[in-house]
Image 1 (cartoon, rainbow, N blue to C red):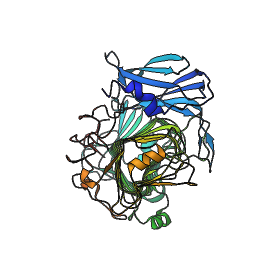
Image 2: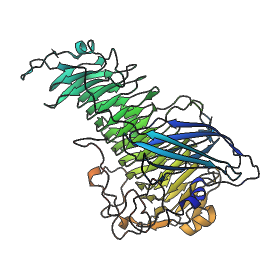
Image 3: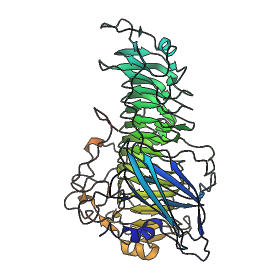
Image 4: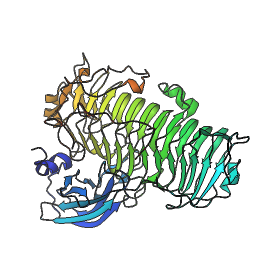
Length: 584
C-alpha cells in the first residue's frame, strides 16, 4: 500500500512544493544525461519559469527489455538558492537534478522522466542509458618485466631493473609486471595511455612489490597530465605523496597498500573517471583526537583527494589522516551551468581515526552519492560545506564516535540524507542552522551530551521526519532549532513540542541505546576498534518498522515499514574496506 500510494504523496514529502502568489508556467529547456558510474546514473533537466515551484520530475527505470518499472527518487528541484553566502556567494540555477542508485555495472537501463506542473505541462523523456563497464578486461599489447637487483628466481624477458628505463619504453596498451622486491625512488610518467589501451603497473602474484620513496618531499608516482594509467597490487610507502595526477583522466588505483605518507592519492584539477578501489591507505597521524597537535605537526594531510567528474571511491580502508577522503576544494566556484565536482560515488569504505573529516563532499555540484560507508573515531563524519545545488545523497552509512556526525555549513543546498545511523560523541545532530533544500528522514541520531538536535534551516522545503532521537539522561530540553541564523532559537522538550513549534518530525521517535545489541554511548576522545562496533538493530528495537518508504533507498524492507538507521533488522551488514577478491 505504501508503494502504491507513493505517486500521490511524492510531491508533498520529497519535493515540499511551496504555494505562492506568483504563478509562471514551467518551460522545459535542456535535458542532460550526465556521466554514469558503475552503480549510478545521473540526469539534469534545465528549465525556465516555475516561480511558484509547483513542477516535479518523477523518475522510473527498468533494465532494458524488463517488464516492470521501478520508482527512483524524483529529481531534486534546484531554484536559485544562494550558497556559501558569507565567503564566496554562489547562486544556483533553475533546474532539476538527480540520480538512480545502486544499479548493476555494465548494464543497460530504460529511464522514463516525467516533467509536469499544475498548469498543465506534461513532458516525458525516455532514454536508454548504460552504467559504466569495469576496466578489468584488458589484453596487453606488450608485457615488460621489472625485477629488483639480484632477483633469485626465474627472470622473464624483456626484463629491467630500473623503472625509469621502463617508463621510457611505454606505449599505450603496455602491462608492466612488477616482481617481488623493494624499489627505491620517485617516478614521473612521460606518456599516458588511452581508454582502450591503458598503461598498467601491476604487482605480480608471486609476492609484494614495494615502492619506497626514501622519505621524499615529493611524489612516488607523478602522472600529472598523463591519462589512463593503472596501479594494481602494489605497495607504496615513505613519501609525502604516493600518487599525484593533476589533469589526468582515467587513473585507476586498485588493490594497493599505501602507508607512511602525508597524502595518499591526489588530484587538484578537473579530472574524469578515476577509480580508487580496494586499497588500504594509512597516514602518519598518531593521535587523531588531539586536533591542535595534528594540525601543528601534520597539517591537512589526506588519504584521497579527487576533483572533477565521474569518480568512484569504493571498498577502501583509509585511516590516520586529517581527512580520509575528500573532494578537492575550489578557490572560486564555476557557474552552475559549467559544473565542476559532480557524479562521484563514495561507497563501502572503512574510514576511521581522522582528526577532521572522514568524508568531505564540500564544493560539489550535482549527483554526489555517499552510501554504505563505516565511519569511526573522527571530529566530523560527513561534511557538506558547501553543496552547490545538489543533490548530495547520504544514505545507509554507519557512524560512531564522531563529534559532529553531519557538518552542514556554508549554506549548502540540495541534501538527501536517509537511513543513516549517527552515534555522536557529543550532540547527535548539530550544525550551523543555515542549510537549505534538505530532506532528512529514517535516520537514527544518538548523542552523548546536551541537545539531541541543535541546528535549523530557514528553508520551508527542508524536512525532518521519521527520524529516531536519543534523549540524554537528565537533559530537560532535547531539540534546539533556529530558522533565522541563530537570531531566535526554539528549545523543546519532546517531539510533540518540536512538531508544534517547527512543523518538523510529525512521525519521529525517541530511542535509546537498547536498540543496538552491544553498543554503548561513546566517550569523546576515546579510540574504538572499528571492527568491534556493530550498529545493527536488536530484536527489541522500537526503530524497527518506524520509518517510511523512500524509493530506491528502502525498496528491500522486510517488515510493515522500513526500519530506521543504516540496516534493516536481520539483514547482513555491508562489506566495508577491501575484499580479498574484489569486484565492483
